[in-house]
Image 1 (cartoon, rainbow, N blue to C red):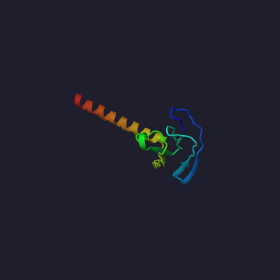
Image 2: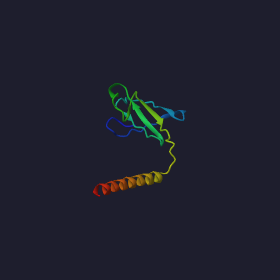
Image 3: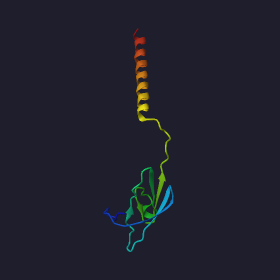
Image 4: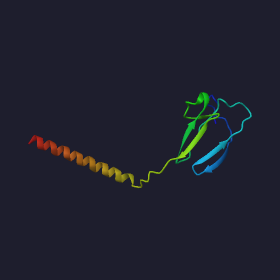
Length: 110
């Protein structure tokens, strides 16, 4: 959690896990925190979306008081082929196009 001027504010949160892809945080404050905001440290395999309300409704890179942080699991692509195989295919395709281009120039020159 950060103060309005960007300095770090120490605060603990209660985290309640709803499911594998959803959890909720609760925090309780003794003083005014209207200008404070939270930036989520997103776990690997997830992405965070910030939805704010009121005067901060257009802010999407942090969460202000009354806003919501939504963490969504990034779906797996299912592509298990090694990257090297893709690189070999691209090089072979590029080489084939180069040979076609050279062959076309020879025909026009003759």
